[in-house]
Length: 199
Image (spheres, rainbow, N blue to C red):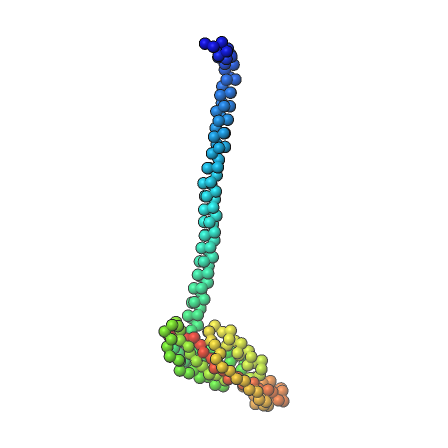
């Protein structure tokens, strides 16, 4: 045996704990070097999973928003369906206008439901035309038109005209003129409108 090797072996036998610690240090160092060289390949799958997790969160948030929008659209559709004119219920359809007369104190002197235009196969509803005449003070007529436009039923004003006349305070009582005024201006509005009805 080489004298230097024999001296090294004797030294190892003399200090076994030091030899064990050195071996453990070498093994740990080798493992650390291996993991350090392999960290790039380990980081890529982690980054991929992280991207997939973030995409899943975005998809989940988008799905919740879409469900809320669908619920909102379903509620709007339900409200529209509930407020369509009923084809064979003339009294109920006319009452829709007369309740606004009571609410605004205007006078609905004429109300006529006209024949519906020809069926439109592309639409899910039918148009129901009406002509009406409402009279009263400016505030009352304006309030009547406003509640008509903002009411639950969908309508479109196709034509209108307004005229003004003066009359005695009590003579224009149904039209809503102030009873104390000697000469009260009465505004009359003629409207052509279309409401949506069930087919």
